[in-house]
Image 1 (cartoon, rainbow, N blue to C red):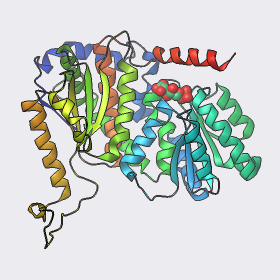
Image 2 (image 1 turned 90 degrees about the horizontal axis):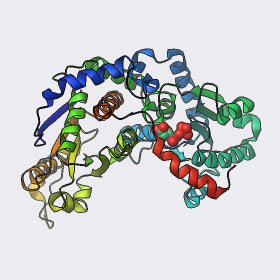
Image 3 (image 1 turned 135 degrees about the vertical axis):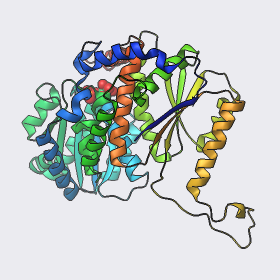
Image 4 (image 1 turned 60 degrees about the vertical axis):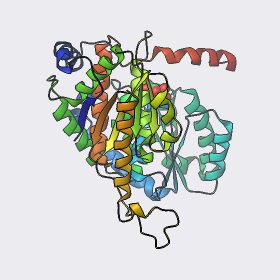
Length: 424
Ligand code: PA5
């Protein structure tokens, strides 16, 4: 379901020459003997996920869908990016599905928070607060406001039916609060970190509330597991991608730009940035993940990519079949001189823009291009793609001798912020 192509990347080493290292790192992932091995629960998750809880997610999602106009997902980082990526990829940026999904708890912007609170005041609302630690400040600030809003609007008893908490099985402030208030709860497994958690209730509940087929998503995940559960580099596209990244960094390329030609996949890029940035960016190592949406950003970043400092390579995340297509109409007056495209499909135009850009960046700009092609923007493909990137990320970090599953660096800002906020 995923095609990986490195033929436009000018790799100066043979991917196959990494086979021995890849086999060793594959073993770290499979027998939990590598760095951060307490957090490789996602590897076997397609086989081991709790089917009873999965059924409960579907029931809860149905209940939420019936009760509200707006469903608020309150979380940050791994506790919201994956769900948002999936929902925007599949429902589009102007999806008319009910309920509307709104994200909170991912910013301290008073303007944003106030605007959302104003927007929801006369609507029927349900809330999913998501936090593994249960103590993340952005999420806690927003959730206190939401809890008070819900209790004022609906009373304590009805609010308890409209608020769902996704958190640790037993520990943390949020779990204690949820138990005290009587919220339904879902579990974030101990051995799956935030940025790998879209395949757990963290992502599954909001995605199901958005009326996306989570059975199909999990079946895509399982297919990916079956396809990628091999250390054979010639057969594993995730590991080929992981190795290509290492070769490109050895060639001095320290930034990777994930490029999509689908605006509704912009959040997939945000999710991917967190996955690779937080997993790999430590010990002064790693590739800076950044993203662009073409052809839109060809009118901004395109100049730098073509002629600027040669610090980056592109990874094209391409979709074979668009979700919808349109035929460009003929116009009798042809005042805009656009009749040369009459009768052509807009997706064809998009694909020609992609081909022309690849040629320009590769041949004239000498920018390496990796290509990852997915068949469509379906739930099954989303599940498959997540697992592809998880495997690639685990592998590429182990090849760099990095623990892919911790994020010690993010504590520094928190420590300073807490001091300034006067937190004891
Ligand atoms: O990947 C991670 O671990 C982080 O991005 C977390 O998901 C994020 O900090 C939110 O943490 P929590 O779920 O504990 O609120």
